[in-house]
Image (tube, rainbow, N blue to C red; front, side, top):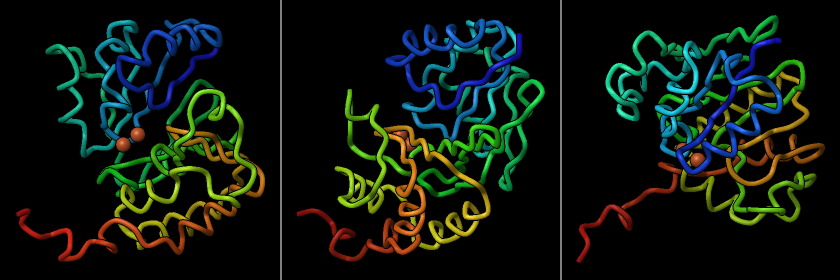
Length: 220
Ligand SMILES: [Fe+2]
Ligand SMILES: [Fe+2]
């Protein structure tokens, strides 16, 4: 049986359901890689349980967070099991194929990666592409960005660090064939919405672009 990987498994709230869901695709002892876009609790706070449930699965995370993620675990749990992804990204071998870790720094974390599967052509985009849809709504793919999905604009304006970063990202991802952008929250983007999203973020002012003295004022 081929090995498998999980991407951004989340915190303890998500663990049980994800473990069962994963077992429907491959036996848990075949889990070879846990990929974390960044080190937020909703990305990787369940690390201790994944390290316990598997004996040799490696965690792939930005070199910036290698020293931080062991704080989610009991002492020694991560020894020899963390692979730091360098700033320029890397190919991550999964059985006979691989996933690409694409640089996505400051979207929103300082060390951040997205994961691209060249076979399914899905870009797992972490906190980029997020909308505030839950439950059944989040299972229906977004096919167009007109109208904008709820929460998408407000989220990106505050959580993405700067327009410069979004422009660099847009230039990079236009070189890849992408069928689906799958963010960590909300619904996936497919069809026309993929290109519309890339065009939209490329011109979006966000993060430090929008900060000024009206925010940086000592509260009364
Ligand atoms: Fe995050
Ligand atoms: Fe998140």
